[in-house]
Image 1 (tube, helix red, strand yellow):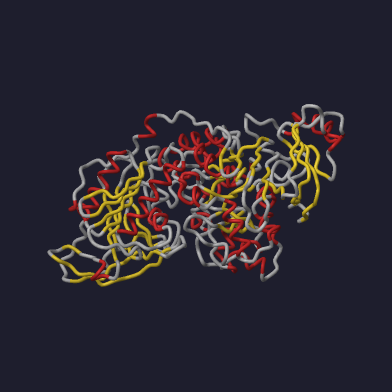
Image 2 (cartoon, one colour):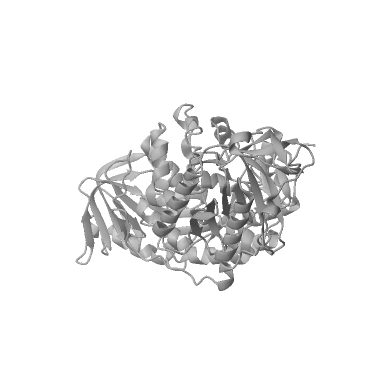
Length: 602
């Protein structure tokens, strides 16, 4: 299978020219000489090899491409540097970068990412199928390859949250005919699959009938019958593993184990030992990022960062590169099109002088030099985002501190508390004794071990609804609040704070600016990241967004938070398909049982 963008011709349209160039009957557009070509297909490094490129594809890969050179052929000498395939991100959400597809592409191209498989289920929760189409259309315009997985679960857990729009089997069937759709996005409703939900199975069936890949999401430590039932339901991969046993279990069931390094998810080290220590076949292990926000992209990198990390964890560099190139391509049925330096494939390639440190010197996409020395050299076109996508925050009322009160007629209560776990997506279900003053439960850093309040403010339909609960782990001091309209996956508004008046001010501020993230302390705003598109993204350059995120993180630290990438943890506190406790517009959710539970223990 080959999925093509409208701007890039399929192999069959240029095959005769590729054959003619390889045979020496027609000149190449570009010949790269004196390279150490990394062949991920055989796990070899070929010293002194050359490649010839025509129409954005490799025509010849071998020891001598001189017969492909004509009077107008561009010739480049790498002087013994490595030439590796462009890196592929097998599972990620562009919206998590706080950027539009165009600006995300501009940010990651200098890091060597030339192919992305993105699930826009964030915008699907806000604008439904129309939002997915907008992301899909802008993705197809980019100078690198961005394929779209049709979101499968909006809402992620029916009955436990309310989204702006819903996705169903008819939407999935329609999207399968779009030119950039590569498969079905992560099937987060794993209880639905396990219990034989006809809607979930219909979405999977529509995807498989189209000959496309079904993405998985099994966020449970249970590897018993439920896990096997999920595997039988059709998902081809899973990225929610956190241990070696998780990775092995998935690969043994014929699923690809996608191990991730995002801004806050550090799951490679604990799973790659299945390859480095247990010696399992690495073909079904794939590196991905899942969620990376703009600051990480600007300062640390993207897939190059993840591959480097895998190598630091003991993985052979050539195997790590396989996990970020050919393994990904094969998984999505694109091994004839991307993922390796071989004839017929898109000429996506990176020049580097070190396979371990992986400095990205030059990046080519479809045979065009698109980045050099950390600078993107090409345009990344934007669509014209409709005006209503910039006015999606509808609070429905003027909020005050009273809306964030949790009341009790006792002098002290036992409360269920969401416990944040550093560098991981799961939370812990905790309990704590909290004081009550004037009928209001009053958690404070000094008196309650770092417990803060958390609220989910409805923002899609203007109902004015506010759900309140408790969270621990951030370490915030008194007088502060952090609000965000990035609230995976329903994307209402999450507000965490130690001062109810500040929580109200933070929420209203986001209503005024149309979405984003704001942090307040003692009556003043410390930082603001404006995300006007769907309350999720900015169409400003990544460097600008990253600068605002840096201010936000600095302000979080000033308020007492020391967690690594704590904002990402904040944004996932409403993700009601990852254990153990989450918050939704309907209440506090125990994801171990997929039921609503009381905030105050009876």
